[in-house]
Length: 186
Image (cartoon, rainbow, N blue to C red; front, side):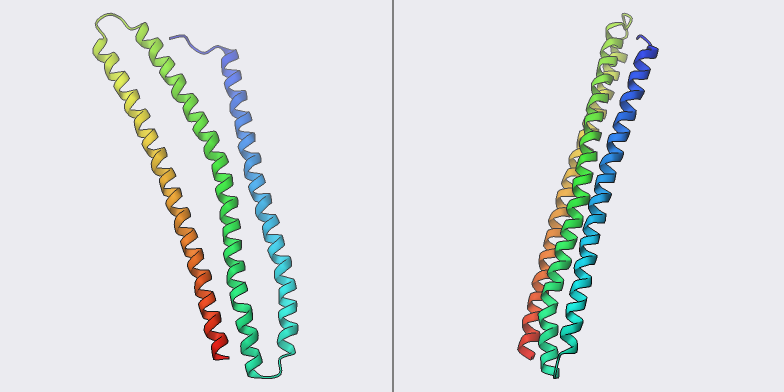
């Protein structure tokens, strides 16, 4: 096996720094999207609060107040669900970008490891077949374990997204049911 040259080490460090800055930029993009979303929510919430306050101050009786409350319940739940969905999309998008880079790095590392193992095997002394087989087996097992972990993580993310969607839909349906019941009572 040949040791790394200074040029190879510098190239590897440069590539790692570029990856680090790329990931940092992706993280900042996610934070920017989150800040933008929260500013939009804050602006619309302030406008809606002013509108709701004005409407509440113009109510003349209890029945009109109940109707006003009922009219506000469902849109509020739907807006909360939409906000949660946006928040989840931002987090999932940022995570997907980081995962894509990590998977590419892992694939590259696996390829380099296999090249190094192949070089070592070619240069192995006679009579070391058992050790070579053991090394090949260990590398294959490590690659299989890594692939299994990646598949399990993706499945877990898919299940979490499905659960999130189901909970969000249930919350919106519950608010619609509550709104209808409140309207009937008013």
